[in-house]
Length: 319
Image (cartoon, rainbow, N blue to C red; front, top):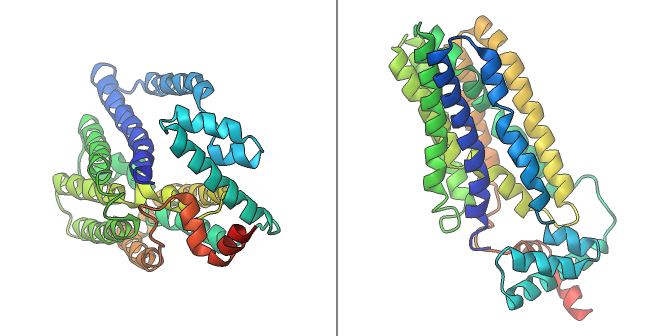
């Protein structure tokens, strides 16, 4: 529980490192072989092949093992992940209690926790963060940067600024808490989007546009980027966690795809100033949702569920 947020951030850091590596690879290839998009695309297959090979070493989650009546396997995997014998036994015991508690209830396909998961998936992407990743070069071209190499350099700066904040915020997520960091992230992102909108209205120089694009992705990476799926999984019981994370991912990818498919049409119709003003308004509205985010820092998954349902905790103790 004391390091869950930090470990989750490592996962997102790896994603953003891969994004940055892709931008740098494109930059280098363009320097020596301009417009060789086939080589750029082919390089993207190298790391997935490595990941595919490493998946065979991935242990099953202890919660799943307990739900499948394989508590010994859960104990083995926890010790493999660094727990000592006593810590692992206590963790398995707590998981077994939670599973018993939730098996008493009929399976639900909708609940407050699942609604929260869909909301997190939707609100993370609705304000255009993916649009910046996909269309940085286009935005810089609209701002007057004519050099293809300069636009690729802008991509690299955006990728770097998406990565660095996560390296910083992972130190604070388990002490400051999820909710305050996500609120700060949402509000700073709103301010950055509003400033970017103003910059396009005022026809600011490409350098200022790059700086503000970096501010947008950096503020996203403070909290909304790395902690969305963490908070979702923490607020779901073991029996609905896989379904809830799937709901969150589905809402997240649908919204991301919707943004990616509409951004070019919208900025052609509205102009970039109006487009980013709309994204800023959507991000400001999303802070209302994040205001009601439950705080889960420092609590085990079993403690979170017991706190949500104290009556069932008492009945479990009586059993």
